[in-house]
Image: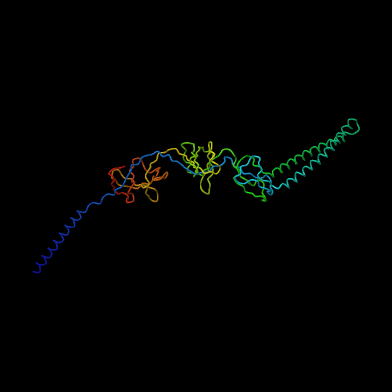
Length: 365
């Protein structure tokens, strides 16, 4: 009986296991397949990209000069301030002229002394010539009188030249503008001792005006489509003018990494005064680039990349790209994407390499 009981119990367990296995297979067979990730895609196409650059600059004079005294001394008076408009012969400042005036006085005295010596020598020479013609003197005395006269004459010429130099040095104690313009800076006050050639004033001369901009050096890697630069006054956008690039600095400013460029303004409006802020706008030559929306950008090994869909298998893979420029809502791709590539523009956050995707809307846009 025990043997028959064990056979019945084993048979029961076999039935239970068979039923459980059948139920498990039915449950596994009834599980639905995992749906494919839905993504939005676009087909890459080449687009003409003509970037526009807009920068803020400042109106300045085409010619700016630093004025300085040509002699050293103590500033006796300063007659102009920053912002004053001056004429060509207007006096800007004076140096105490006592030292130079003393030199002029000494030179004048030297001239008078040499003139007296020359007059005496001239009289002696004339007398010797008269005596020699009548035979009352020797040739030797005549020649000595002539030599003394010529020496006195040369001394007088030297004294007069020294007087001219002294008077010129005296004139250097007065600083004049030299050309009409506006004083833009000053660096001295009355009573200050200045050295020769030390900058005293800066003047922006009347005449042509330029707009000065500080550009990043990368701007010079492209060529402008039109040499004309459109200029707009910041304080009044209705005031506009046109200019052309006149000068580009050959060096880079080490403090901010920019290059200074000057744009000559053609017929500048009266409202574009010195120091006024203007916006300069220029357009570069167009080039062929692929434009993608900003949300298509991904990262691969720390570098910009996009997800590309294989047209045969619809599997995605990450492809690095080279970016030309960023604009609002879009990215200009220089390299890495070929025309016709299917680029994922939505849902890229859920992707992994080799994943098969489905297109939202059922078609490539």
